[in-house]
Image (cartoon, rainbow over all chains, first blue to last red; front, side):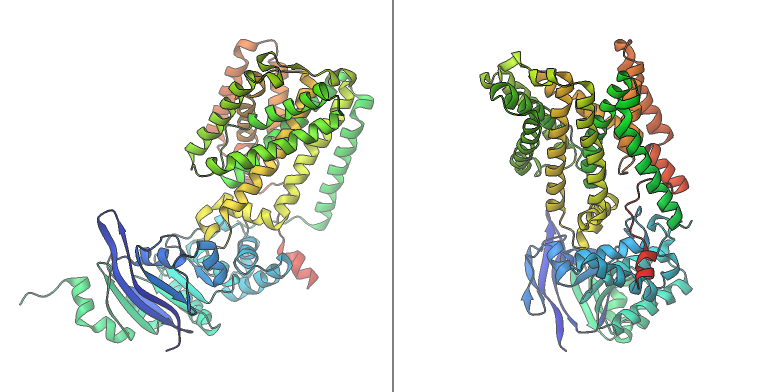
Length: 241
Length: 327
């Protein structure tokens, strides 16, 4: 596998609480890596470390051969990291179109004229073409999630980090999101996708990594991971002998 | 609810109204009584102050209680340049802006390390410290202050035109700022700072730019205000009352909107004129009004009109149809 991102033995503590003890994984080019694990496993903390919001107390992050552990949030964005949030954070008083322009202008350092053209394309691709002049604050949950993906895509990312992008959606909405993830992959973007909805992990990912208590428990093909004893133990607890 | 962009004709009509309004304001001294001219002069100057406080608090989240620093520096620069060096009054206004920027740059280093309410208190303390320092600084005649005699040669109309340039200039500045690349960052930061940062917006640099712009314009407006007051002394120049007025105007008009400080300045100055004969209760009435607006329309007059009806008079929006029609 040609790795675009390597996470090597990262850990982080808040006081005496080791939220991530030792996490390592690789993300291949054009790969969708699902991340599962129970609440408190450290999934969102991991995303915050990858985007630079949190600084790991140990370990390193290698992106396209460069150590980016000490890079700032904005530097990482400009290098090619895009993300969505567990609870979407659109720029509510801006229109959908303007939200997406921000991604092009600041994330990919485009001139505004070019960013506007890209915003038109991206809003169409993502399915927000008919709502591009809506204020983002007026969008429903699915469209807010779409908008976050569109905004991230406009920054021309190499790696996209999805934080429970299918959470809180209906079954048909989840299949819309799956379609968007496939489309993102077709565009050559690698994805790290945290999710609780295990069905989407089976259908939408190439590999799945299971986290528990700040460590990686198992990583492999979705079906293998879902059926593994380790994952059952993590979610349901170990059976007594 | 769909946001309805204005049609081209509506947009032209809007710009027509603005040009007409500007023409009326430019010719106001030719046909209006002097009292009216004086009231509008104050509106323009307070409008500039409100725009700059709004630029900080409304867009970058920097809630400053120390904007009087720049009013004082602007006023004192004018006084020193004209009284001690006998140089032109306009140079005094410009130097006031420049000194404000330099001072803002110096204090930004410690003050930007403070977050939220600590930043607010920090700016206030800096202003109080300046008041004490100036009241003991013999170069600026300590607590005695200056009579700004350069203003004696100016008529109300002269100061009106200076105020017009400063007031309209501040609105135009913020408008074009919002239309620029920096404006995109400001609007994104206003709506969600953490999301803006993950989109590649550098919060510190953007905030610093706004702090410096705000310092310059407030410094110039402060100088222009002291042209009309004609006397400056430290504790009045660095009084928190200036910033309280800015906060009032922006809250009444609508924080984070371009039109808010304009409406706020009109309401504030007109009310102050009506309450001029009741100094004991004027602040109480203004306070009650501010509380009432916060309760009824927490986003201020423009914020509420925008939320409920999508109304914007000075829109800095990027329109998708402009790109579509160009393509």
